Image (cartoon, rainbow, N blue to C red; front, top):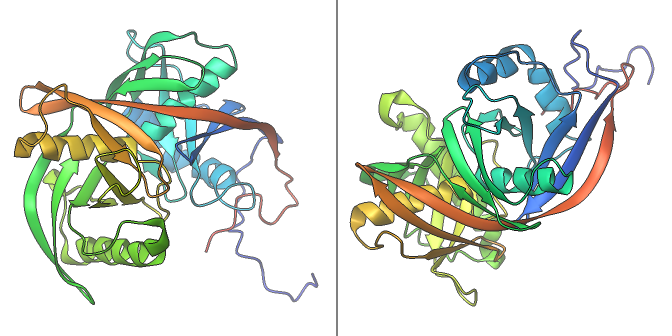
Length: 329
């Protein structure tokens, strides 16, 4: 590159990165998780919500470097294990992706447990894990399978109608499952792999409409996940979903927080009884098994899925690399 060539879109900063960062990668139902094992940022002590804020304000260059291309991809979710603030918990974790930071991540939690077991850091059995949105009880059942008892979930609004440009009226529910979702039970499109481009376009349009029209969750919080539902087809499940995540990628897994939000809607409608199993399939056909119990006017979802370790590596960072902080478009 000559001296008069344009600067690449690397967003150079003076913030330093470790020379190497050790990670372990896994997938849960097809959705990847990257767990930071060594040389993650020191976020100090205190409640995880505050440590997540510090991650965002002081170490966002770390998130970008680990998640974005050329070392990562838009679909990748990162997990940073941290010491818990609550003494009843075995550990804490902060999840992040290509767009920012997540409250909770169901597939990521299952991937984290399987990864820690792979490393010999936890044994099968019960473990409480602290997140920025609350404590998640978990059970590592085997080297590949785990159950998460998620944070209390609920439906905040039912039958919300959006006038989506190029589509017309779209009706959905607003629900919390650890993240905020707009759930559309009848999207007018086949929820199939073959129809993926159309589903991506539709979910993008719905997200844009939510943002443009100022449709928010209680307290003005942004609804940053869109979930479309259809029949399960040839998969042994109750339905199949397509989930648009923050940053525009779609979830390859059935989405743990999205399935929790779905259970909240089914419970509110009275169409699924406490303890009954709901099998949620993803757009690629992977399945989570789910059930719930009432806790006051919220539900406590229980999600079971499988994860598999796919690799262990050292991510290397050279100060001379114009893309050490990731490619940002």
